[in-house]
Image (tube, rainbow, N blue to C red):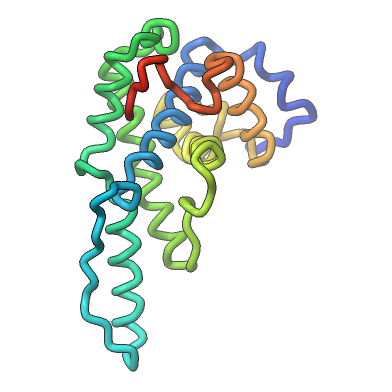
Length: 195
């Protein structure tokens, strides 16, 4: 049963350390996904498919193709790349001590799978999750995808929070708690670690 929270921050004390780590992982994963898009690569040149402007479906297919090319991961394996980086990150034990490397990879895979489905649906409605700035994208998308996949990743309580605003407040508060000063740059390690 979905519920609205009177005080979304009041729930913070009841969230387990593992679930806080999953929330941080979700936001960091989506921040990494945003930052690794092909469109941000210096040498990105889209392959423009043939477009027949008198054929609505041709125009639509071309638009989808360009959008997919822009937002595809630079090396085609965002889950593996981000998981590996997080597993080797200097703050790995501090930030994800309750999650194994396998947990990190599986959670990222679940979140990526549902995100790609939702992004396709958004494209069909002529909008995109990518229309936000990186930090807003990370918080908003993590909030939504954790809500959609909460029960599959061991956070069924998150499925019960109907209000997107409440979920966003919780995600932001946990990011501030766990990442403190690094929130704006998500996980910079001081050594210009790249996702």
